[in-house]
Image (cartoon, rainbow, N blue to C red; front, side, top):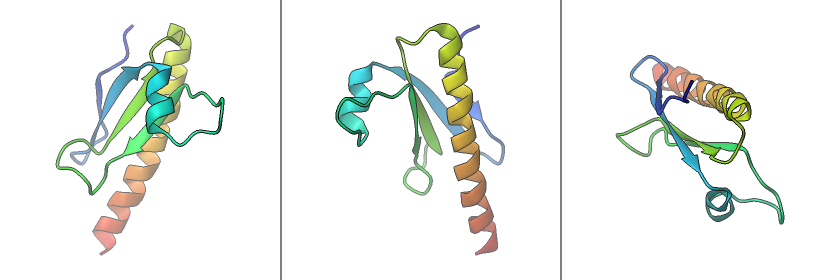
Length: 91
């Protein structure tokens, strides 16, 4: 089964899922020398009218590892969105 290209987390929040080469992480994430990532969640809450964030997954990972990385990054997204939404409601 293929990874979804977007995830709807309720409340109108959605997250895009993008497969990228390792060079994307090197160019766009503050990494230590030689560090490599399997995935990354970019929080866009309050910065765009579009998605709440984006999940980037290394496109050369084995299928099972892509899914494990996907779920790991979805949990980061849920955590950030839940905190954002709670703050938005309270203020």
